[in-house]
Length: 489
Image: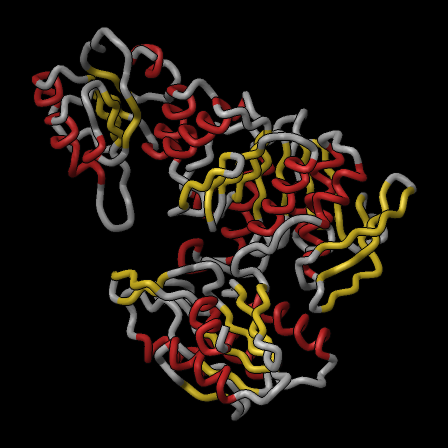
């Protein structure tokens, strides 16, 4: 696409310079990736400001630089480089608009299904992917664990990629035959406009509880950020929401999309009842259009009836046969690190990504329900550094109230002192049924070897992650592999 055509797709404040002839080679926000005829977008980040790297982009022969701060680089310097200077009000929004235009609006050529919420995003997208594959479609997936183009894995770095990477990925999915893509839509991606300009055929709201308040500052901001996804839908899109969540109706309020609800509420469009969960999986009944269906999944936990019902709703509204949907839910494989059960015959270890108060409470409630209070429950957990500090004492209280014994350990301390994080967790604890073992490996070993036969051990917080980030350095560490080692598997 020619630069002049791209400029016409962006809301500009000022454009100076004469666009070169020829095609633009790419849209970049990292100056190190700029090549001849790239457009460089200077974004003000949290750790550095892209405006500082405009000169580097010009040195690499960028055809244009897009920026918010008009004083960041003199017009004469841009002119001397033979480039165009484009001033915009919001560089992040401009990046999204440029990326969408450069890749020829890929989300309009694929059925994009966005899933947002505090918990359940990953599992819901896995359900959706498997259902549509069972129906014979090639499906893309964009999310926390990995990105997929059909069966091919592309390693994830962000739950929702930056807008240029995202539009490239959607283009690759379309070019390789994907007709549907299920995508986790994080609150950060909505706030930072990574998903601006995308078109969704369906958006799903799973649930919302306080999370990422270090970033959003308060719950109201967090809620309103999630709402952006549904406000962006058009009248031909579907909005599927959990009506059991008190904020579900607020999320879809004023959305122009067609609205469909799921949940146990009597007025749900897709009503859940008779939930039964044990260590073999979860079964439930689903009522819709005067029909009652029996569904089963090998995924464990009452919350998975909600994730499966959300996926059922999406597929049914997309015209998939209900027998195929039931089979797709039944055959959805274990999602890595999402209530994943390991055993050596005497003890059971559950690896779970529960890193919020709500998800930790739900995980422990499911374990209590499944065991009927007849087996001792151990919990190993910590809290991440450089993240919401308010949840730390809350999670400490939840863990000790719902466990027989808790081992507080290190999660991803990042740039914080692990001991200080642990002390903040301890500040919310009222019971004396915990111990502190800062080394996560030692904590897991202690829980497994120190628990009696028939114990259930929840290792919470990291789930699928295969690293531990300490002082900015990621070292290999897997809860699953560590647990298997001490189980003797």
